[in-house]
Amino acid sequence: MLSRFVPVVRTFTSPIVAVAGMPRAAYAVWNLVAGVVWTALIILLGHWLGHIEFLRKYVEILAVLVIVAAIVPALVHIWRTRQSADSGT
Image (tube, rainbow, N blue to C red; front, side):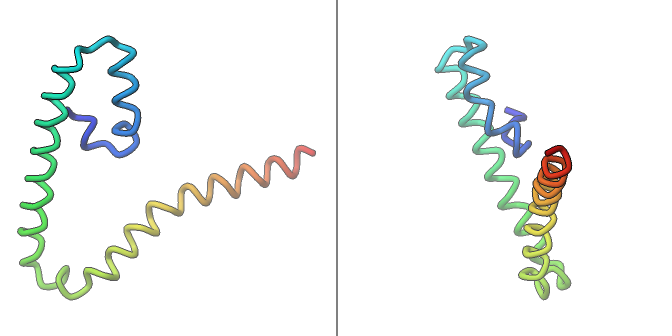
């Protein structure tokens, strides 16, 4: 259930659960429970944060900053990998 709240882990949960031999019914129930909890938390968080004037005023800029913050580490990794590959040849 907790993997629903960790972006990278969420991607690999299903294959890991299958390899571990967890029964499908149990996985389906916990996946459903986690989905409902995740959805409720996001809706409540959005409702609560929607009352903060600063966030309402700058929501688009903040969204772009969050996306950039999520992409920059990947770009830095790609750049470093290419730099090390170029210096290694």
